[in-house]
Every structure is written in structure tokens, then in C-alpha cells.
Image 1 (cartoon, one colour):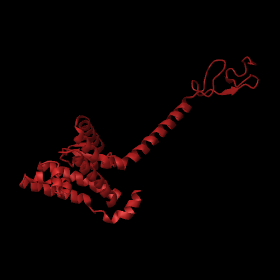
Image 2 (image 1 turned 120 degrees about the vertical axis):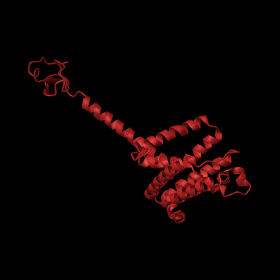
Image 3 (image 1 turned 90 degrees about the vertical axis):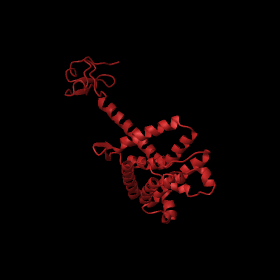
Image 4 (image 1 turned 90 degrees about the horizontal axis):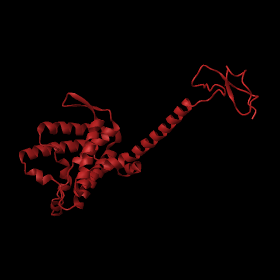
Length: 259
């Protein structure tokens, strides 16, 4: 399906979209630092959009995650790193689609609950989750000292979002679900395939262990088995009824079972 969409709509994809997002956030940060009141003008407030301030439908994407110069530099660098990797792996169209789905869903969630002010935090976090899913062992130097794999950062973030989802109100839940909708649409099929594959591997492994631990030969007289004495040879007596095995110690001097 994605391939068909890409053939039809691929020419409309915005190249280097992550550069636009990062650059827009950097510009918004500088603008807000110079004029703090501009933060309110960029936020997605549905009631203001309905009054004609339609730029808010897009400008909220550029709201900086922090007003700390140190944090914003670090955050934008990571955002570019993650987004660039996804763009290179998927191509411009699929990365555009990933962002577009999260954007449309976030706008829809904002309008669904009156008085809601939308945030771009969950949409931007979906980029982190996508990167962590594809490159779980990628390491970051936390505080430039402590090496931490991205999968653990994503897991902690997911736990926090889950807590916010459970404890928050309707608006919070809608915004979280909307911002992460793109991640689940893109990755749930692969998660299901992996889970099924792991289930099959576990089943095969259990069967292999069962076969390896199973007793194949047991002496009818002394009960010795090929597991208790791997070096012992066993034979089946043709004069005894049924399939009765005997170790070499009792093969020639046992009483034949005829019943």
C-alpha cells in the first residue's frame, strides 16, 4: 500500500523535512527569547484558529521543547540525528507520511476537546520511538559521560507517557494517542510479526529440549537408560513380547517376557 501511495504522491514529499523542523524550532526559540509573548502566538489553540489564525495549524510544530539554551541545542541535535536516520532509511516520502499522520492526528485531537492547547511533544517523541525501535542499541552519552542505549531512554519515556495517559484527562489521552498514532501505524505490523516469530522459535526450542532430554532406551531389568549411562549400548530382545530393551549387562541373561 505504501509503495502505491509513494508512486502516486511521492513527488509531493518535502525533501529534508527534518532540517525544516529543526530549523523552524531553532528560529522559534530565538524569536520567543526576543519576544516571549510570541509563544502564545505559535501555539495551536483551536478557538483562535476558528477566528482566522490558521498559521497555528503549522506553527505549533516549531514550538521549542525547552527555553534553556543548553537543553534546546542538545534536543535539536538529537531530533536531527533521529530524523535524518529515518529519512535516509525510509526515503523522503515515508518520513513525510510519518510526520503528516502525527500532525493531522494531533490537530484533530486538539479540536476534539474544547479548550485544548495542542503540544508537539508526543509527535516529536514518536520520532525518538521510531529510531529506538529500528536502532535499539544506539548509544548516547548522557551528560556527555554516561553511555546509555537509546532503547532504555525510549522505554523510560514510554513509561512516563503511559503514566500521563492513565492519570491525565480526556484531552491528555487524546493528544498522547494522536501524537503516537504514526508510530503504531508504522510499527505494529512488524511487532506482531516479531511476536509470532518469537513464539514459533520458543516452540521449536522447547521441542528440541524435549527431544534432547527424552529417554530413548531403558533396560527392562535394571532401569538403566541412555541418559543415566550414555556409554552403555542397548538392544531389543526378539524373543520377548513387545519392544523390550536391555542393557548389555542383561541382554543375554534375562528372563524372556512372553505375555
